[in-house]
Length: 118
Length: 106
Image (cartoon, rainbow over all chains, first blue to last red; front, side):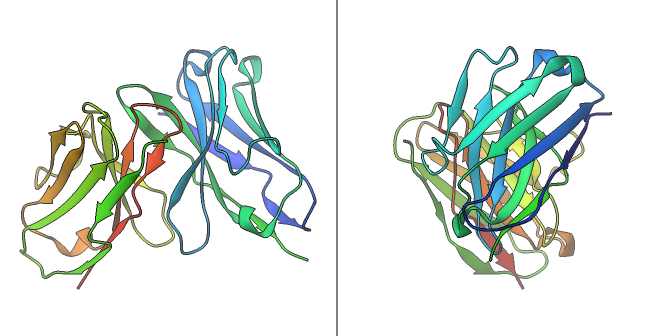
């Protein structure tokens, strides 16, 4: 069974940093690209970042480019999102999702809440 | 970036109704279109991928159609558990973009 478990969310002050993690199991993590998707309270879904299976290709949404860094450790079956210079607009539930070009975002984690507030 | 325009943004419906939700892409995306259902406080659940392929385990009253720029999600006979918010997603090219959502309520 595919499982994606996010962690690392919490309350952070504006301008602060946070690192999210996603632990993957139930599939061969090293062969799948991954994405982060977020959802602000009461708002719609927003794609955040993509990383290929080998980390050779990375994309970011314009809203986070230069502030967020996606990475992965295939030996640890883990995906990460380093978030710096956080602002109110980054308050959201962050989901780790598995990607394939045909199946799109088939599997999602349960999400981790990031709250940016003073 | 490809913009996804979803309509309506909200709708009232009754059990047994036929419901149709539309997504329009700002440029052609072939059939790289997925539909998700999200209930309050829950994780989005994929219903349809590749425009018309039904996710395993999803009831057959859900169907998707379209190609290019115009796509439709149809619920043939709305059930109580179908009251939720629905999102389309274009997965043809990055950045991935979601529609704004359609809230289906009583």
